[in-house]
Structure formats: C-alpha cells, structure tokens
Image 1 (cartoon, protein in one colour):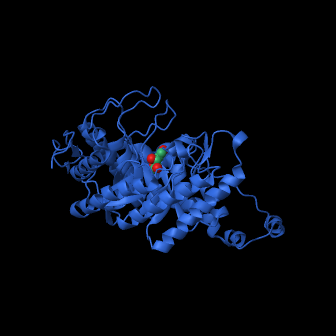
Image 2 (tube, rainbow, N blue to C red):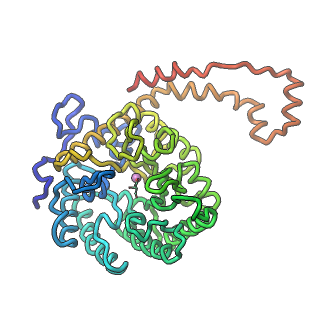
Amino acid sequence: MSTVYSTVEPIQYEGPHTSNPLAYRWYDAKRVVLGKTLAEHLRPAACYWHTFCWGGQDPFALGDNVLDRPWFRGEPMAAAQLKLDAAFDFFQRLNMPFWCFHDRDVSPEGATLRESNANLDAVLERAGRKMQDTGVQLLWGTANLFSHGRFMSGAATNPDPEVYAYAAAQVKHVLEWTQRLGGANYVLWGGREGYETLLNTDLRRELDQYGRFLAAVVEHKHKIGFTGTLLIEPKPQEPTKHQYDYDSATVYGFLKRYGLENEVKVNLEVNHATLAGHSFEHEVATAAALGILGSIDANRGDEQLGWDTDQFPNNHVALVPAMLEIIRFGGLGSGGMNFDAKVRRQSIDPVDQIEAHIGGLDTLARAFLCAAALYESGDLERVLQDRYAGWNSELGQAIHAGASLDALAERVHAQSLSPQARSGRQERLENIVNRFV
Ligand code: XUL
Ligand code: CO
C-alpha cells in the first residue's frame, strides 16, 4: 500500500562514516552492549500525536496547517484509517520497534463518549492487526484528558464531578485497549491537573481528587489484570500555570501521600525537566533514587525560548549523564524512549519526519554507547565508591543503625574526631567523561 512515506526505502544502519541522510549512523539495533542489544536497551518509540496529528500550526500565531497530509482531509473515520496506514508504514520504514498514542490521536471525538469509543474501537481493531503483521509493539497508551474544552478546569481535579467521571470512563476504555494491544505501560500526563489561579482553586481538595483518581486507575489495572506499568508524566507548567505533577520529587511526595508509591512510576521528559529548572539527569537520578524511574520521553528544548518546544534530541553529549544514570539503575524495565518530539514548522515534507527520527535515534544510541563505555571502564564508579568508602566503616554502620546525637557527640569527643576536607575532583571527573564522548 502506498503512503506519503513510500518514497523512502527502509532505513538501514550504515555506520558513523556514511553521509547517506537516510541511514542510521549509530543506531545498530542488534549491536550488543552491556549484555543486551541497543534495541533492547533503548526500546525506542514513535509518538502518534506530533508525527501524524500536528498540522504545523504556530502555537502563538495560530493560522493554518502547513503540513499537507491526505488524512487531514475528508470524512474523519476514513481519514483516521488512512492515518493509521501511514503510521505503520512510517514505523516499519524506520525499523521503529514501538509506538505510543492518545485515544484522540487515533480517532475523532464523537458526539458522546459511546460514539468516541466506537470510533476508537474501529481504528484500534485494525491497529492490533497491523501490530501483529509488522511486529511493532505498543510502548504505552494514554487518554487525552486535556484538549477538549470540558477539561479546561481539570480532568480528575475539575470542580465538577461529572468531568471527573467522564475522564474516568475515558481512562477505563484506553487502559483496557492498552492491555488488549499488549502495551508495556499506561501513561497519565496531567495536562490540566493544575490551576490557573489560586483565587478559584481549592488545592487540597483537588489533590485529594487526583489521589482518588489515580487509586481508581490502579484498582482497575489489577481488576483487569493489566501487567504493564502505570506512569505519571511530570511537567511543571504548560498548559496550566502550575501543574500538580511538577517534577519527579513532587510526584513521589504525591504518590506517597496517597499510598501509591509502589504502584506508579514516572515517564520523564527532557523538555519537562528543563522547564522545571532541572537538568534531565537530575530528574532521572531523582526518580532512580526514589525507585520510580519508569520511562523516558526523548526530546529537547531550546535554551533561548524556554518553553516546551519538543525538538528532537540532537546532542548526544548532553544525554550521556542521563544515560549513565539509567545504566546505573539497571535499565528502564518495561519503559522505553519515546520521541515526544516534532519537526520544526518549516520541515513540511514527510521525509523531514523520517530524518528527524533517524537523527533522534542516532543521538540516543550514541549517548548510550558513550555512557556504556564510561560505565564499563569503571573509572567514574571507582571514584564514587571511594568517595563514600567511609560509610562502610564502623562509624558509618552505627549511623545507619540509628546512632543518636548523644552517642555521636560522645564519640567525637572520645576519639577527638577532626575530619579533613577532601577534593570533590569535579574537573577530573568531567575530564574522564570527555574521554568517552
Ligand atoms: C505534553 C506531553 C504529552 C504526554 C502524553 O507536554 O508531553 O504529550 O507525553 O500525554
Ligand atoms: Co511527553
């Protein structure tokens, strides 16, 4: 079947020295490193929304679509099926092992939820068959609880319980579909779970609503026997002024308050981390330390623009520290690396989207290979072990066992402890990293 991507031959790995723009230079899917293939480590995914649904509208000037795709025209359900054909053609040409979707990306909203669900069923039935035929798997599904006007004051955190109920019904349907399609995870991004002004917001009540909503999702997951991971996607703001899922640490506090810290992990997005004033590696390291690192939305922002520009990753050096944290954590488990990224507005040709994913995947692969070599050298890990070696001593053990202030004060005086400062060796460590990038 011919699609807008059909002129592009399937993308092959040709190695770092190729100048072919339609070849992978670093993503050698079958290359084994740290005991697994690159494809198994990265578990890369293409997203449906930016790639097949966004028409190139300018977020500020609005105006017309500038991307011309056949599925932007015609009867909506026929267009949705056309879009599905193009999407699976796209995944295959890129040898992309996974995809991700929102319900409303895949099929149009109906007059009622029943109608919307029927639309979704018709397209996802075919998606399931295409997944079987092509071997492309589902990294995660999610419900769009933020685009429609009914969600403007929140979904789970809406002042109107009918909106809460509507959102719950929508999540039930998409969670069940995610299970049916063998999805590895289910994502909740709280795009409208926040506030515009505290003047009209009962923050405590809204957090309780959100906690109950998430608990209900967990209950349903267990009821239907979905074995994938539930993931919250932190973001500090946009579209709301303040979102409740601000960052990894905030999400952990929220999960802990509602007793869900062993049930839900995080899907961390690079551009969301930087919007929150963090480095991406900070977010990864924090989630790893708290035991809630789940999956990654790979993209990048623009330092001068400062908003969620969702650009494709193109700087492997910048991603090495985060990859190192992921390796130290033991990998992403059921998670993967989803390109939550879109081409720039002037990149109007279908081939631009192909090249964007090639560059993004090459960047992730190269960053991972650098981080793996750095990790395997043991050079950083040895310095780290040495830095904390004192904690293996009898004193370190005693502190962990709960030494009191009295006992420690006694010890300091009795042993005349006078600890000396030691260099943090930051520049040496930075130089070590540079040997591997
Ligand atoms: C928005 C965002 C979403 C989520 C899924 O900033 O990242 O696309 O990834 O709802
Ligand atoms: Co995202």
